[in-house]
Image: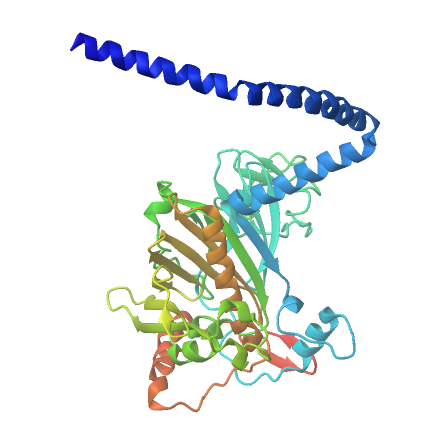
Amino acid sequence: MLSRMTSSKLICTSLFLAVVAAASPMLLKLNDLSHSVWGNVLPSFWTRIRNFNTGLVITSSFLFAYLIRKVWKVLFYPLEMQRKLHDIGYFSDEKRPLKDVANEYRKRKKRGEVPPVYPNGWFHVLASHELVVGEVRYVSILGEDLVVFRGTDGKSYIMNAYCPHLGANLGIGGQVVGDCLRCPFHGWKFRGSDGKCTEIPYCENVPNFAQTKAWHCLETNHTIYIWYHAEGSEPTWYPDEIEEIQNGTWTYRGYTQHAINAHIEEIPENGADLNHLDHLHSSPILSGVDLRHIFSHWWQFARHNWSAEWKPLEDAKHVGCLQLVTTISVFGYKIPYLYFQVTARQTGPGLVFMKWSSSLGDGIFLHSVTPKEPLLQSMRHTIYASKSVPTVVVKCLLYAEAIQVERDIMIWNHKTYVPKPLLVKEDQLIKKHRRWYSQFYSENSPRLSIKKETLDW
């Protein structure tokens, strides 16, 4: 056994020496070549670098850093997109500014008999991160001028914007003092929780009647909500509290915001108008939002498929529930990983909580519609998703949702409200939705009256 191992070692050694002897001339040539190449190339390269324009190198470096930052934002930053009223659905054949076209159309748009313009319920005011401690914001919604501020106690408060003393706007220059807001005009201080005036700098005793209106304010789901009721009634229900947002299971990935020229009821009515899905929203996302082009036969190779059901809940009468399943097919073949299931809780007149799940993960859209004027709405979609879903994927989902919504907006911006629509049997859910939505109107809910070319309510 030992002799056999010794003979094997001798054979391997002999083969190794033979290979080295045969390859030695080649190795010497490679050594000479490397010396000659690197010896000539490196000094030449270094000389060119030294002679290169320093400014161009610096510019290129900044450009490279800028591109890296852009790529980083695309991959990891939330998508935050705001559209103004004239950005969607208006055209100018005369090359006029779209803003002028939109404003002119708002004046000329036919307005029939519409329901009250401000229904009763909870409405979105601001996202929590838009109001830091000590910050004051002036907002105009629901026909009211309001001031929103965050006290040093971390709580958010909403009051009437105009000081009852001499009418100064508390949202313009007001100062936060604890849980109070000091008027910039004469220094009167109002408590955010009840609107009571707690201090007048030049007065020893504050009269009991010195008070402004404080509105019911709720902060949950990283959102600040306001309660509006035409009769002054206390809240009878509250927005859903999303546990996954509260405990951090789902994280913020961005929002889109749109202005819409329509009555508020026409927007949530889409949830019960199931028949429009297979027509308006069947074209692929790539076809865009322009209704003049999305129905082209060029896009018939792909389509969105929809299956939906809407019904009001009996145990929570202020809630309507939409079950929705959507798939995408290309040349008749359903793409397996683009299956989405949505459960949307339409909570009150202006809030929808749309939980979605897919093979990519799960999350939620916080959908809100807040009236700014009688026929001008602010619609916002905020998306949260599980941490396992890459941000770039969630941004694509949010952007795709925005495209589908902007198709609706092009309809809403140009349509009129029909109080007695011509409906067929298959449209029965629209009538059912209108009966359900009517619960959010009361005797003193503001109504729209038309006087010449002005809007009065």
